[in-house]
Image (cartoon, rainbow, N blue to C red; front, side, top):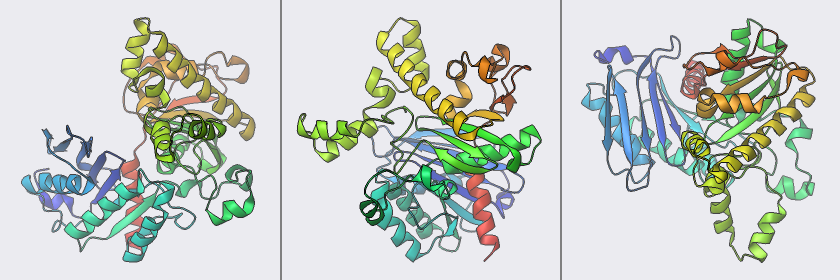
Length: 404
């Protein structure tokens, strides 16, 4: 970006993960991206940050002990390229916050009270909310005059039907400890479902769809007329599909068994299920490219991991087809969903009797654009639609500050 004035009215969107920080400086109205970057492996010895601006990309390996250091490094990259974010006239900074609990179900202007409440409910997302908060506080210190807006990953699923949101445990215990299905990746599911309706040329209120957000974290949703009626993640992002390092659905009795028989403590079990399970736990890898290479080389462990992944995915697709009754579209998004043609084909294989037919040539095409991969005779549209959480965060943040 050669002209710093082009940032006037832009929004800085921050998307903090447990060990990463993605950011984008963009205009939410025109969708023009002025700069973006990602800090990776935060807190590890080989952390790095990549910044792209003005047609140039720079990657530096540097110490990033926490998300505050990542935010400060990103700001320094902007400053080095002549863009002082404190003075260019930013409209807002939008922050992804993973868990909003029972209170936050709309984009919210960040205040001291909001920060305190996000901190209070961080026990519901101990891997993510603390990192989100560090990013928020760092930005407020560096850009005190720019409004910060929290966009909650659970917000889209706040109005799930009671039957889908309720766990069958003692209702008093559930109420006292805020136990319910909250759902996650809501910003992505909401954005993609809107893009699907636009692609089909139909109002979102007329489209029944299944959205499959498949990345290192993975989730599925059933959306009827723009309203979510079910989702795979639950009280935490651990429930549901097999993921890169997370187990997804397991028998709760396994937790007690590991405690009583294996003598594992709560923290050890937490680490096992969140960081040492899923694809990584099954075959030692959570990168689909590496897993595919291992399968092609005859690795039985990689094949088993892949088969378990696909089995779980198909089970959710089938359940949501029944729950919706009529399905107009099934959409793949996020890193794996957008790039792994084999996963898409295997997830929907042999479903011709249900109106689902994949076109192999269409499915093999690559590119970051919305496209149909189903055959002409398929009665259910199968799509690949890139997600853009940063754009969604920027749009929602701009709407909040416009009301100030």
